Length: 419
Image (cartoon, rainbow, N blue to C red; front, side, top):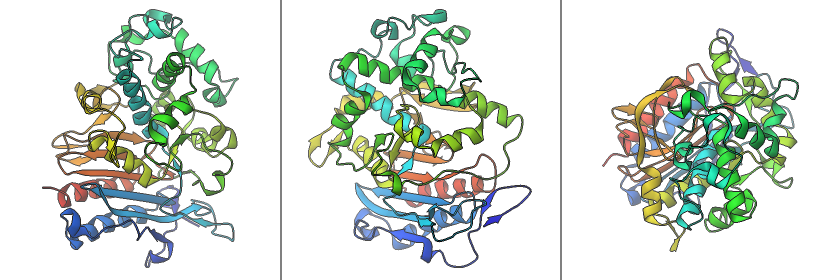
């Protein structure tokens, strides 16, 4: 059922205990004292996650926190299917579990970026070289001088591309057509200003990987990250066998109205509600969208960031070189106004960076790096606190009381994991 406040689409979260709809990976969680935390600190963090769920903006929440390389929390709350705004919880409702796969949307970009850094580590590309050296057709409208590094740091000059309304947003699932449109699109303002590349950059980076390696983009991911890290999911798109377990996405929160609706459409190349609807379709899971449809559990995303935090090592294997990661997390853009997101942002070559005194990952997280996904999905590592965190949610809400609860969760994490 639905709670409504000033037109908001909210989940009925009840008034009592959440224990019945909470999943706990007890076998994986270690005692807080083993990682330098108190039981009270962990309880406080989890209470903040519960408070985020109680806002009603998210039918399902999964959360994983690693500290000092060990899992402290790996839990889920809510329903993967059948518990969204406007839905009654009938016999087909399905609870979320800690290992429920969820689409990361734009949080996928961090993985795509690190694959490009991996290719550079292997000698396949020079990140400071022009994109057109690898993709000769990438010359439209003044983009011939754009480098891979500029694409990674959202300074490529092609944050958007025109999709014919007659073709519909399904165009975004047609790889070859997207490459053609992006290559032909003119550079924006000469490619000089900072503007988040919501869809475009991912396709170009992945196409370079395809051309240089002769492998499919998913095979490159599989051999460089997914297999070495022992992931079950962590794939762009989702195979048919896994789809019965995937979490469904829902429009939630306050209605998306002008001018926010216009800004969201410009960034996403489709209406807000259309993006959510498409994300639940089989053809979306059949496709590979390098900037937006990697599927992962919260624990898998946290594992990925833990590998970065550990200098590229996982279970004794060097997955990436430390020098590669140092470049990937090094600031490439100082805190500047992002002309797509309409807020100040700070980027490395592929990652969203934390900011002091308060940024994307909470207060005093200037050393943190990770990525945000549509909407309020987060994965990040914070070297100062020795944590690797992932927060996956299925409600797509821009405005609402959940923002206060999210800020409180981030603040609690930063405070309790300090030192």
